[in-house]
Each structure stands twice: as C-alpha cells, then as structure tokens.
Length: 432
Image 1: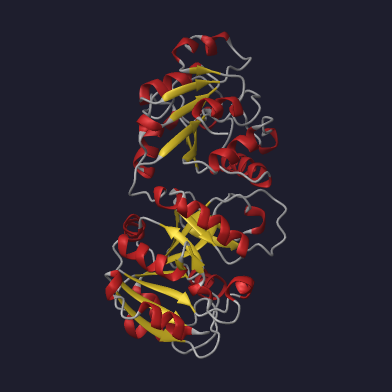
Image 2: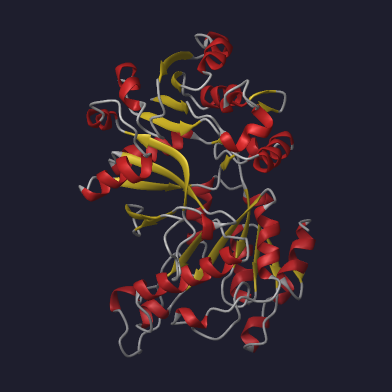
C-alpha cells in the first residue's frame, strides 16, 4: 500500500500562523512542521512509499522532506501548477502509484491503524473506503449515509438543509482507494474529492464503503483547532487512540441510562434524553474512554417495531446528542427474544441467543472490533441485567437504579458502585 498527501493548498484560514512565508503543511506543530508528523505516523503504521502533491510554496516542503530516507520512507513529489482542488492532482501522481493507496489532506492530525483499515477495504472489495467517525458538531459537517453493511449510499453535505434525524457519521478526510481508480484521471482538472470523484462512483453503483473508527483524526485548518490538537498530541491522547493499542471503554445501557425509561420504545418521538446525559457523554468524549451503547431490543423479535424503525429511533438519539455537542462511538443491539406468544412476532428471532444481555455476545464483538481492555473498562446501566452483563464480561459495574420493577433491584449488591445519575457514575471512574 502507498499513500498520497495533498499538500498544495494555501491554507488561508491559517494565515495568521503561516503568514505568506510557508505553506500550510509546514505550520509548526509541537515544535516541528505538521507534515513531518504525518510522514512519521504513516511510517509507524507500515506505509513507507509516499507521494506528496505540492503547489503553493511547495519548495519548502520538498527541501524539508527530501527523499524521505531519514524518516525510513521513500518520498516522491508531484507539483500542481495551479489549484486542482482536493483530487485533481492525482492525474500527476498516478505515474508514481502502482498499488492501492491512502489519500489524505495535509491539514490533518491523525493516528490510525492503517493496516486494520486496509484489511476492511480488501474484505469489502471496495474501490474506495472512507474513514468516518462521529464528532461533536455533526450539524455543520458532511454526513456519510450508509446501509447496515457499511456501504455508502450518498453524502449529506453540510450546506444542505437538514431538517430530519441522521446518523452521526462524519467524513474525516482520509480515503483508501483501489489502484483502479487512477484510470479515471485522464487530464489535469480541478476536482473535488467527494462531490466529483466519489459521487461519480456512487452514481455508477461502484462499491464504496465507510470504515467507522474512533481513532484520532482532526482537521487543524484553523488556529483554534491547531491549538487543541497540539494539546491532545502532547498529552498522548492522539497516539493512545490508535486501535493497535488496547482501548478503555464505558459500556452503556440505552433506556433508563441515556434516554428516559418509557417501557418498550417503538417510535423515534419517544426518545427523550435524561438530564445531564449530554454533558456526561461530552466528558467521556474528551477522555481516554470509548462510549459504547449495548442494548436489548426485543421489539424486533416481538413484532412491535421493524429494523428500519429502530434505525430511525437510533438516528433520533444520535441527532439529539449531536445537537448537544456529544456522541456515542458505537451502538449495538440484540434483536432477539426467547419467549413466544406475541402477535406479529418474528419466529426466526425467537431464540436463546448469545447476545441478549446478560450474556456477553455484544460486548465480545465490541472488544474484537475496538481492541478493548476489559480490565480497564466499565458497564453503566439501570437494571440488574446490566450489572450481571458487566459481571459476566469481567468489567467493573455501576448501577443507576430505575424506578421500574422490583426485578431490577435483585442483583444491586453485585454492582461495584450504586449512583443516582450518569454524571455521578463518571465521578466514580474519575471523569469530570
């Protein structure tokens, strides 16, 4: 696998930092040019053949990086004589590319397990794989709309009027392309990566997939974002999030923990956030922990709700959280229910499965997906099932007792902590 770094832009938004003397990729970042950190991170993740597309004041980049040997890489350069957008310079780069390649902008601070992403790309047989993640401001971000298998259906661009609910699935600015994509670049022309190149692939029905990951990827195209990223880099948070390293997680129940308990929820309008939850999730988002929702949803097996309606319910949850500046890193649910006798039930889902809490199938899948260290993780929920699930998985447990059935109080003694709210639960973990 190779990599292409788009480093030709002027970086107008960073002009207060760069002035007119250096290009954007040479902006100082923790004492060194930003692009050096990008090169070293690619090498650390196994990518050593790198093409850098330069333009405005590009000689500064060429002189600084050289042939790449001092970074343990082979670096080649191509120059765009005029602005070619976020993809047009691939026409010049294609002569140097003979393998699948990672394309990224030069204004990113990122630490991604590239080999894990590449394995997903190959397994899906994708022509393009977009790195996507949730963020704290989805309302003004480009949203990637995908199906349940991760296949990209369309973009919902930030300038579009957005009145409905949506999944917090944001395009992060990193794309893995199969080498065959280069056949499309037949002349030097100004092209926007998403609106021209990827949109054309989607229109033709080509396999474009979204790779969801909580790893650190941040656009530092403004002075404020640059300052935040430098603090997080120096604290070790950037490197710690790489999925080659063990992650810490807070597993969260849904009903009664994040949203107000109203029995079985079958409509999006029934979702109502519990007071204090957005602030608590925002604190988790700023911590070293992943926020992972694990929920039983027997409404599917019982026939009370279709999978499509449940997806709308969860989009409502994501939207309400995003509007409050927070997010969950992932949400998984069990659609099964072992007991029969419900009108309209789905017989194929009336099974004794391995994923329904208090069994640990959902947690097991998340552990594999995100390389989670259970010994440093927690389960927070409002019922005995949540506590028992955490105990079965081998994580510390925190109970926020609900006012529902006596059954929910049966195993309260097993919880490591018993609190009154999610913010109080985070205090027990050490997150404020």
